[in-house]
Image 1 (cartoon, rainbow, N blue to C red):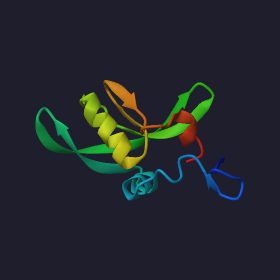
Image 2: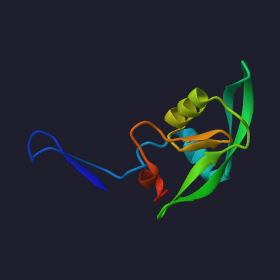
Image 3: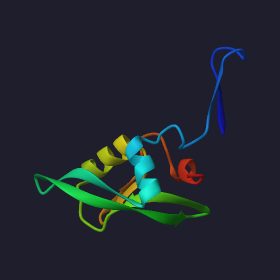
Image 4: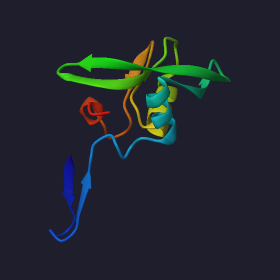
Length: 107
């Protein structure tokens, strides 16, 4: 849990990491174990099925969307930012902007 103090101690915002970043698609993926996402691949739009996978990175274990296909890194970054979950494809892994693996360990 992170608490931000704005200008004075009278105003504060408490944010639980990872919880406020989840979209409806991310919640659906976590409940069902998979989700279909529209992706640009080889210059064409395709519906790809991403599955939820548990990953251990150092001392942190977290869940991410995973697909065993080659997808352009710009598309992986776009999906991670839109969905709000880490995304891993065959050629790389991306986290939503401003987050790391520690933000998703409690999901």
